[in-house]
Image 1: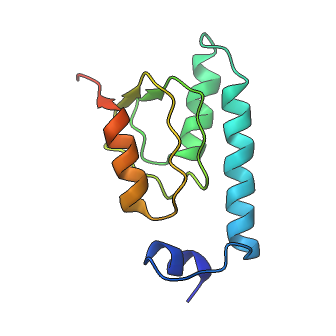
Image 2: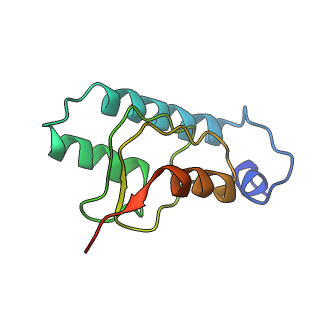
Length: 109
């Protein structure tokens, strides 16, 4: 079983695993890129969020600053808006999703 699979299953895993370190580095770099953008750079922000949160729906956004540990393990319910900063840093999807749900709201269709 890969270390990422162990983490997602809630099992003890090695965070220093090269695959997990690469995911974390990518997410941390995307966090930095996003946090360095201006609010009017909506296309640039949207592209970064799509790379970080694969199921963020069209028109979804996060005000920022953002701090994701892995990003790809965090799932949203599609069109999400967060007017406050969020920091989902846990690996398990249940925890990250709870943080997103607590601080975000669905945009009207």
